[in-house]
Image (cartoon, rainbow, N blue to C red):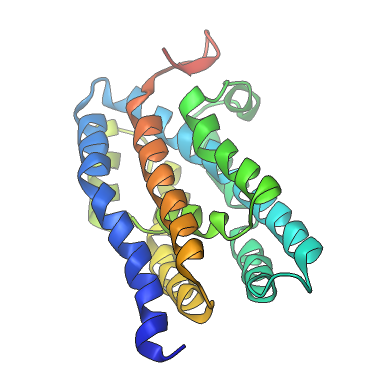
Length: 234
């Protein structure tokens, strides 16, 4: 497979993400217009934590599946190496996100007691099913989506100022704004290294489109935080 052919792998994935941009942008635009801004921003930070806490376990499962498929699947040596490396990059990010919420005065146990929405379960849970029962390649599309939209500092400043929350609440969000462009370049390199055939590209495209749709739905499902009720939804 020559360089032009392999480059088409990342172009394919990015093209699928681009198809979803209008729906994702609309979901986030609505979020940042919804009052009360402080409570909605906290709900968004809770959502980030709920997604982040599943990242390392998902990749650990993908590594296990790659090991199980070793010798029978040409993709899994490279996939397993990538997931092992990315685990090291994502370790403790969920802990940081929880600490950021604690900086806003919220009890971490209260955060953890919030039941994630059906939309979050669909976003994350679908990947567990695909990795375990189909192929660990599917997770690569999910990661590509989550790394595709690093928030610039100017946007984080705007969210902070409108919410009135302290700067310490946004540490993890700013870290991801700095790291995600590098991670996106790494995943593009991974796409272009893998010997993907048409079936693989269809799998990857399905994972990307589903992840974008479920992420937008998760954002649209957010409601002001209500710790007395133990939920940020409904």
